[in-house]
Length: 219
Image (cartoon, rainbow, N blue to C red; front, side):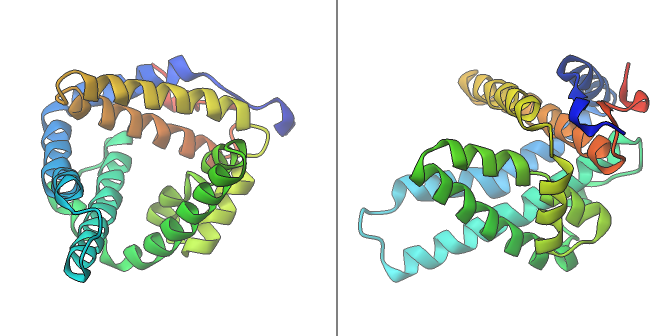
């Protein structure tokens, strides 16, 4: 395989993601609302209520809310991976990922440190790190990898695809920003679609597909 010629058809990926979203729309919207109500909204509210010099109690609450968001975010990704291949999924799948959470927490911590350090230095290195290591949650969920191994696999798998993934990332940010701009309601549609699109890319990386998406993920 000439991996140097690997490409990503972003339009085809979103077409399939949208088709799957329509197929499971009511369930995905419900799961997304659950995630935002339990994990995202409380953290945003607490952020704006926290004084400039937070107390020890405030810092503890902030840490707990961050852990909750990470845990449910992992569960949300798990649900999306199941629905991507038309496997059975239920809301409880968001809450029963404790065994893999330690690996996910370690990887998320290292990933966050790497991205922040890169952004602090020259911005571009931070973006590069964010792109190359972004698929670690998928390896943890599907392959049962440790945090370190998942990060390594993501870095190796994304070789020769940095620019394509950068362009894809722009579409993800733009779509979700638009979702937030639409009174915040649009995010319940854009977030599951963009997460599923990312999962499709992961599947192609996992199977070392030369031209992503794989045929099974084309409409």
